[in-house]
Length: 155
Image 1 (cartoon, rainbow, N blue to C red):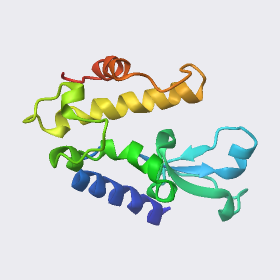
Image 2 (image 1 turned 90 degrees about the vertical axis):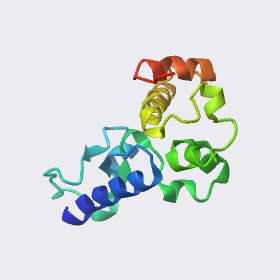
Image 3 (image 1 turned 120 degrees about the vertical axis):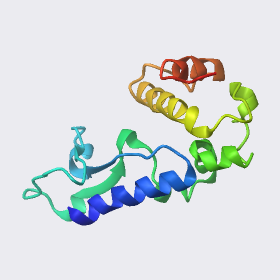
C-alpha cells in the first residue's frame, strides 16, 4: 500500500511541526472488530494479504486506538481532551486547562521534546488499562505523573 505508507511520512512531518509524538498508522479490519477479533492487520508498509477482504472492510487508523482528527472534529469536548499532546500549544502557553507546566512541575524553559513523549506514553497505557477494565476511571494527575515517570518523565 504505497499511498498509505506515504501517509505515515505525512503523519511524521505533521507531528514534528506540531511538536508532538508521531503515531504509528495501522490498517484495521473492520469486519474483525465486529467479531471481536484482532482488527490490526499491520502497518501500511507491511505485506498484508487483502485477498479475502473488500476495501470497505478496511480503514487506516492510529495504533493504540489514538483518535484521528476525523474522529475528533465533531466532538469538541474530546478534541479539547487531546490538545495537550500538541507540543506547540505548550510552547505558546495555549494548552487547554487543566493541563499546564505548573500542574506537572515542568520548568518554563524545558523543551516539550524532553517531557511530552513520557506523558503521551502514560496516556496510551492509561487508555489501554481503562479499555481492559484494569482502571475504572481516568486517574488523577498524581497517578498520571507516576506512570509518566516510569517512562522517563523528568520532573
